[in-house]
Length: 157
Image (cartoon, rainbow, N blue to C red):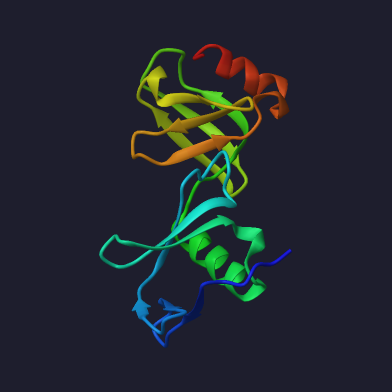
């Protein structure tokens, strides 16, 4: 069920999002920002202007017209980078810092865990692991990992 939007959204010649309000006000360089990017990625989004001001609020992305949903989804995908860990192949040691060889949904890589406090539990049984460079890796469901991967993680949890 789509609701009538209070704004229109388009891209300009430079690829920036342009929002036009029902009153005809135009804002160039709009950014979508998720309130809860991990636990509710398609709920509670703000459209923020180039100076950080909130221009519009979207309770549910799926209630927006398809053209707006596509533009917002494209913009978020271009800005957000959070690979999902599919498997942990090896760990250099069970103290920290340690280097992990992992397989993600974006390919094989390695991360350096600075300390156990950089592994955060999420609601629903997931984990968020931050490496030494600040890149966040998501494990949406700990139980979905294979047994060797869970055994590696058990040493740090």
